[in-house]
Image (cartoon, rainbow, N blue to C red):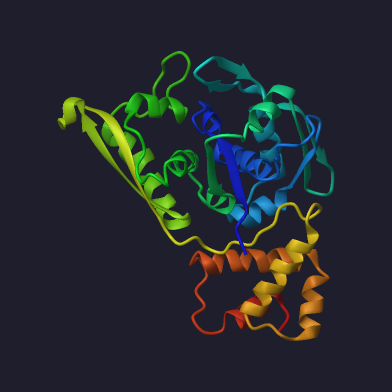
Length: 305
């Protein structure tokens, strides 16, 4: 049983864009559904409630609407060896009233760029990307995932990294200019969240010109791959419902929930299914402590005992 994997071309990983945590969660959820043979006019569907369950954060419906509105109005920038491209993401976004359902169609340029998955892929666990609250942690996790098989990233200029993180805008205005504030407000928070919530253990080293300590100009991230968590949360339930049900049964078996009647009740309720996946994710990542009877704790949370 494998966690859902997001694949990105490295030009996308290295793109310069400034999104909030909520906006990145929306983008990650959609990217988990993108395939190379998708039609350019495909509608991608996500559910607000599923994002909340996965991230453990509550979002107001209006926050999602504001997030996509701002995403749609912002320029997305990609730089490759041959060109520098600016484009905008959405053709349209529909919010289906009363369902918490968001339907997204990308512009032709956006979907073509997002589908460039033919060489030099970056792979990372969708649940890991969603589990972090810091937008900088999400972006640094993407970058480190690109280099995880090597064990360390290239040596970035700190200014280059700040531009990729959206900390320097097109006019040259810079946030966290002091290195101490950059460390405490960005780097150290990102390290903690990545190390606590993902399949990677990451550290960093700051260096000056010629490897001298001052002035600090460069940064290198060092990556160790940890044993991945089993995070069986399936977004594409309409596309692959059998796999989703199979994952659910495996979770119930692992928790020792054998009662046919209880299993039938859970399988018959979409809300209970989502709660099972959420509980399993929290259990696997250590957010729920249940050393002895995890199954009993789950049933109590579900109101079934």
